[in-house]
Length: 298
Image 1 (cartoon, rainbow, N blue to C red):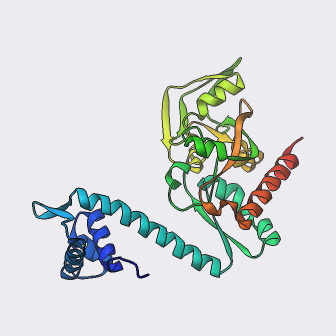
Image 2: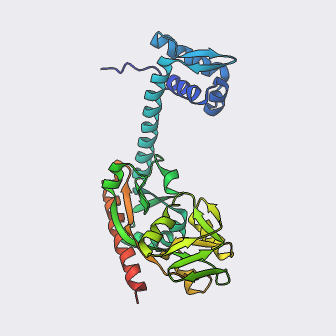
Image 3: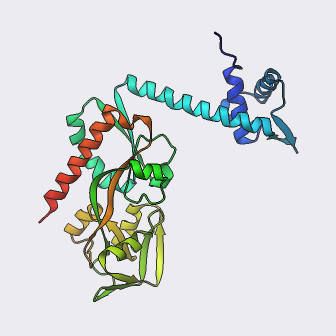
């Protein structure tokens, strides 16, 4: 039975114009002329037998019918794009899209990744190095995160714990701070935009309290670490991320490190999370993180 669908390009032209709110911008994106895109949208409306846009000054605006169609077409095109990409990736061998913080990728995952490839030479890992909250709905198969409080309940329930984590305040050796009893005082806290509750969790778990006069905020942990190395304040970071800096004396940890109960976990974010490649990666990183931690234990 033949499918009752309008031409694919008319749907692409409609979706682009609806998303951009402009036929001109849609034409630029699609590499077509204004007239060609207008004709495709007009043909789609004729095919449907109803208008999808209303005039809005010199531009266009979706009407109720157009808005409903936009949701359907946008979702279908996104699924088609992802499916097409997966077919191409799988034709080149098993692949897996892993999302994690840039700091974890640069300071731990990439330096250890050669071990994974030795065990699984046919699997290719694609990394998205960005903040966890920025990567949602961008096609990742697995998401690594320790702070999952803001995630949907389903994600929290599916999270696979892979390692313990321990956080502590760090600063340059010459930075001025005071530790009196169980209270840390400093002029500047260095705060991560997306995990700002870490300072609260650290105080709850460590028994320390902390006070400060000002805050510096950064969107990535490596920027927080660089700020601490530069003597700008005290940053709260996971111990693995600053192990070399501590060993070299570039940073000190005046209050030590304390475990965070939730630990580091992998959150499955696509149906490929149950693939053989994903299972192999989860097993490998769990073992590697555990071995790494045991090697650092006194």
